[in-house]
Length: 254
Image 1 (cartoon, rainbow, N blue to C red):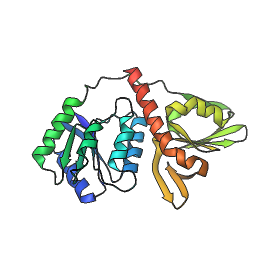
Image 2 (cartoon, helix red, strand yellow):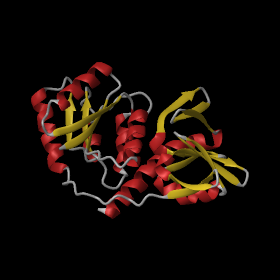
Image 3 (tube, rainbow, N blue to C red):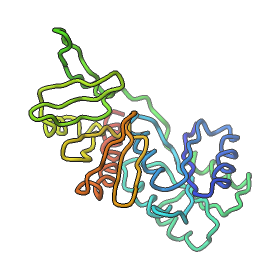
Image 4 (cartoon, rainbow, N blue to C red):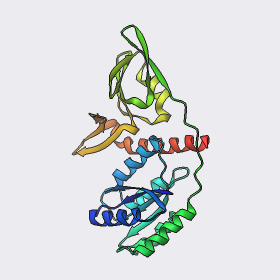
């Protein structure tokens, strides 16, 4: 069964599309996003969590990151999700199929036409094979004279403290003797992104990217963290790179 993401900045259209998709017995799960940036963020989170995404039903004319731009980014990933464009505009069909879309639907979407698009998506989606889980990287920390191991996946973000790094998790924080640069080299391919000279963030735990004038912040777990001006331009590219690296690692395991 298929796991898909529906993307549209018009909420009634997004809700209708998601409703129709959820009624198709070939669809296992439908995720939704109301703009291109959120969709990109959600895909990064899915890949960071090891979740499968088979297809994206994508509007074209959206503010910010539009559907064609998002499709170009997604198309650069190894084994990317298949694309189905859903739009009110006929003039982008050539560009859509140049991006290897499996279908191009015009709004308002008819149920029978959507069913055909799902059939094409299913035909274009390779069979899923079970993958062995990646070995978990554990960091030893000292607590009251005892050694405890903190899971990489439990870490929200890491903060430089001189010659030490403080690991922040849902349960609290832990100080370890390691440089932030060394931790970045160790965990960079696992979805940890430098957003500040003193902060390394786990992409899997990022729930919000917020722009307020020239100020950019990330919501990580229950914390809000600033993105430095130096790193602001790189954050989107870094997230895309993490998506690609994770997909390569997953493909190597299978």
